[in-house]
Image 1 (cartoon, helix red, strand yellow):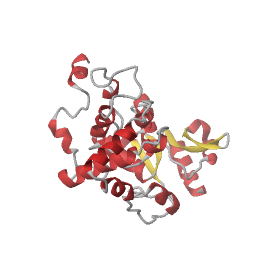
Image 2: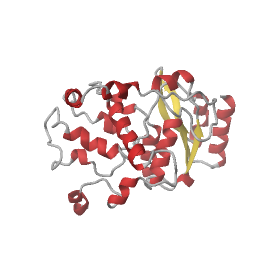
Image 3: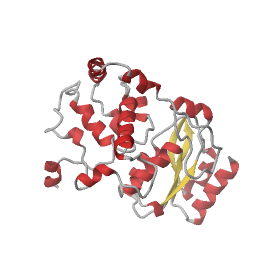
Image 4: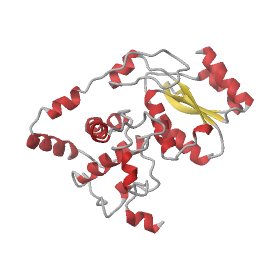
Length: 271
């Protein structure tokens, strides 16, 4: 850990990076923090906790504010998959990003049921065994179609339209969100119309979801959103041979159907 901290300090001091997005403890809790050369001593407070934040999503906000700066970022396996998708969608420039790979512990991998609990390049920690567990999907798939529909309609009816799933998702990077378009989603109404609200987001996740599971963790209504998006992700793999967050050069097949954007036409015309 000390060597990792020193390496980050060296990168900041030399100007190789303008900042490093990592985590430090604040009021007894680990929180994301942007370390810079102006506060090198703070790097000593860098922590690698057994909790996760959408580091790629936070990085995107920093990149949008400082588009010409080179930024380092602490990435786990899911964050690394997110960087691949952000680069493919031209939201970040890979040459301006310095990922510092962190391998997850076996305990965290099992908690997340992660099939790839480590990034492409590891700077701290060691690879642990992937966890291939789709018991959540199997439980739903065991129901017949009418019961399956009732199950999801019941889950969606719990939604309070807080947008927590969208806000925490590192793959929700549209400049204009269709979930806020009044022609698709009625405003001032909770729960939202079901299943339209969640089907819209599921479609958007089809070629993007990197299976981090943060949406489900953030949902105050405990809707099994990850199960929904995992199923959509499996469908992309089975029918179109595409797995998001894996190959940098492989394009999302759904992008060939339009202008490579996810906004509805009326929103595009107004810009």
